[in-house]
Image (cartoon, one colour):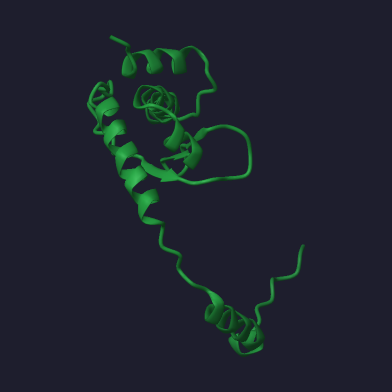
Length: 140
């Protein structure tokens, strides 16, 4: 039988509270640059057009994913996250790709999210992902 866990009174955690307070003095909220927010709004509008082509099999309404223009560690020009319903696109892609290529890129990432919404899992370019991609992204 294991011993019962012990708890420390809050007064013993005073040092931790002091450190957090000191860090708070240096913590600043960084607002996104105006061009970043403008790019995000541009991408949101393009994703909305793609979502207009999608209909969930159960009639469930799908909310617009959060769109971020940001850099991150790792490969790729864009990434989708099912856990926080987000699409991230690198700033260089937004500034250098024409709208048609951005639509293809966004459809690619949105297909990952929509498979998550329908199947409860992230699809790694399998049959279901390709089916979804074709549903929301058609040329011509």
